[in-house]
Length: 109
Image (tube, rainbow, N blue to C red; front, side, top):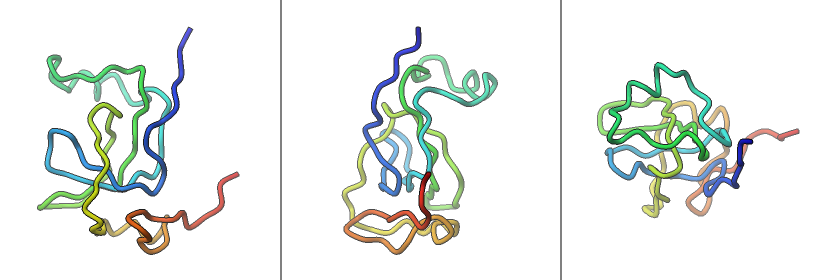
């Protein structure tokens, strides 16, 4: 039986990767790993995160580019910088940055 746990982070929250130099805005959360086996197995085994934890979809940025990232909860920390994320897709999903977070632009069902 699969165990679910509550996600630590929420939609619109800015987070950064614990080990790699990127940060992003959460736009979706999977309660457990929900990507392909190929994607998972491409991660070096000694740093491969457990599948049984929340995984976050981020509108991410680093010094070179913007992209969508898929990151395990164990590899994220809250971004306390207060700085906006400049990903070009943010305005499609979120309103302007407020108190270090992006409010959702649309209603959830």
